[in-house]
Length: 87
Image 1 (cartoon, rainbow, N blue to C red):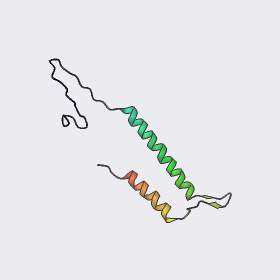
Image 2: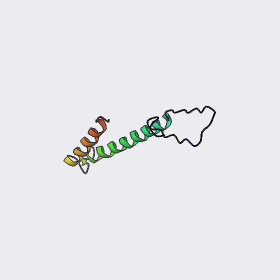
Image 3: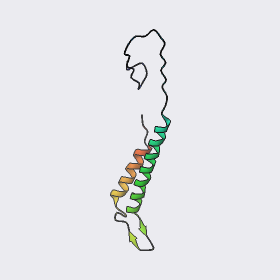
Image 4: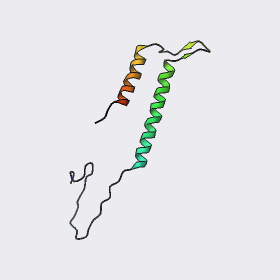
């Protein structure tokens, strides 16, 4: 059975005269782990993008992509994707 519960497949192997119990729950630890991994990856990306477009006033050193439209475009696209609605 694949349409009894959305997202759950039931493999019915044999008939039985006793009552069977099925419990379905949310795996919150996996959800928390995945969100944490995403946040870490996003923060790493933002740090890398920031350093590419940064300017260090003490050493008068510009990042390799400071003022580059491509860098701004990538940052805007990531931000737009992150904040867009998901169906």
